[in-house]
Length: 114
Length: 115
Image: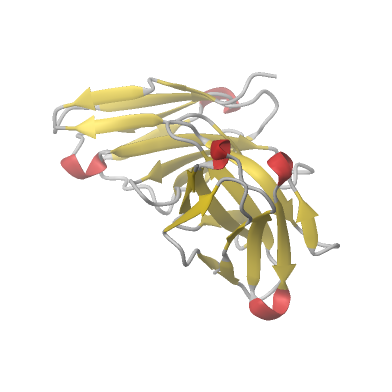
């Protein structure tokens, strides 16, 4: 079965600074990888996903993520953070294990300071 | 296109009382999920439907939780009786089962408080 770890419970960055949120997964084959964002009181919204091909994927709101098989990682990045990016970010890994199953990480809460 | 609709948004009940949550998925999405999200945690799957069939309910506490998806469209999740530990956000999501890339679309959730 697959698993996913987000090592950072929370991160604080200054507005305009760059951002990197870490995600490590465990799965024997190439998994389906996702990043979702959740604003307070809202459901999760997909930022980007990786299935195959180019290991650098672009998402919405200026986010990108890079799949590194050797490190079992799928870190999320943004070159310049805006105050509106403050939210909870979830990495998720999906795989065909008795049907398609998606496992979510515990999340990283992003705080943005002025 | 309307998103996933959930109601109610908030519910406060006393322990041992029953409660029900309703979800209407995105039109055409035949896969529907119910998740439990505790504070500071990611969503945890309770049950997944493919059309009317519950294909994964291994994490659903069947002694008190039940769900149904009649006609393969909207769904109801019920807890009876509720316990203090059931206080959480209950999220509904939907997706296309094929050709959709397995990305899920989430509703805003129902925040349940059991007192």
